[in-house]
Amino acid sequence: PRLANQIAAGEVVERPSSVVKELIENAIDAGSQRIEVELEGGGARLIKVRDDGGGIAEDDLPLALSRHATSKIESLEDLEGVASLGFRGEALASISSVSRLELVSNTADNPAAGWRVVAEGRQMEPRVSPAPHPRGTSVAVRDLFFNTPARRKFLRTEKTEFAHVEEAFRRLALSRYDIGWTLRHNQKTLHQLRPATDAAAGERRVSALLGGKFLDNALHLDIEASGLRLWGWVGLPTHSRAQADQQYFFVNGRVVRDRLVAHAIRQAYRDVLFHGRQPVFVLYLELDPAVVDVNVHPTKHEVRFRDGRLVHDFLFSSLHRALAEVRP
Ligand code: ADP
Ligand code: MG
Image (cartoon, rainbow, N blue to C red; front, top):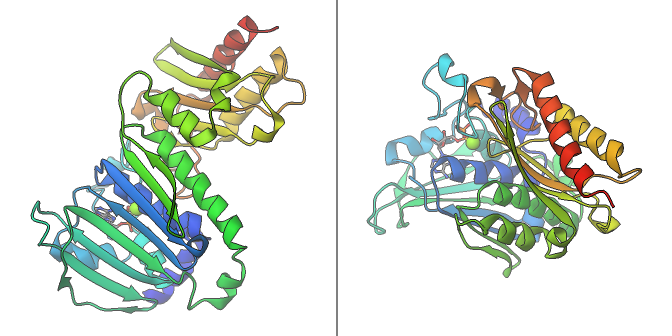
């Protein structure tokens, strides 16, 4: 099974940023209020994600590292409208098959309690040993791809790998204002984001992550129709070109990169005034979870809407109307 894990690892674990994404998603699923991410060497040397979520019970610790051991789904019917981010139970197994992984967790409020399990490449130490840890979980991933040199060779410079990690962090931190976040690289704190649920929480989070200038040249919108709600910010043409890659779209709080969505936004931009410009946006689409499947693929961020046409038209017309109003 470890070999199968290494093969599967290719799908889920491409580079440090994919590890960070999977670990953060697990932390979110565990109901965490604070998530700390710490890296060394762009993540190739160390990736550590620490959370204050529900934790993993002693008996479940070795299970968490074995393939298809997900605690998040009881039956096939659960797949319909599944709310959690992970559901395949292969991320931790895959990551541990290509790294030195240490998992420390505690489900109790007593910080002296807690358990630890380690795995090193194909070798998993089955013994769980006591280790103090506050309620929650810490996962440390060291020496990514140490046993798959071909894969390790594909890692780029520390700077490039960290840029990918920061981008993954940004997307996830933009998806949950109510969670407090920290990002550290080589002992330096780069982001420290306080949790908040007040009306200005979004603006603070967006300027902290995308720079204060983002909102200066953006239009805020909040539109609701036929059971769909679209809110967030779209950049206006005065927006500097340097920010052209700032495209963030969330469906029911999940990061999504989808062709139908991209098409609708591009269309609205092109129609109104943004000839030749890349759209810039942070947008949140909310709809009945029963009419959208966000778990089409574990890493590709695609979605499947039951009525794609309706969603496309809603996105297009909402943006079109909002942008046309501010046309210079
Ligand atoms: P999945 O997220 O698809 O279930 P993973 O391999 O990512 O699969 O995780 C396996 C299991 O380990 C999860 O289902 C969960 O029960 C447990 N787990 C992993 N990370 C955490 C965490 N940070 N807090 C609590 N439980 C966790
Ligand atoms: Mg997971």
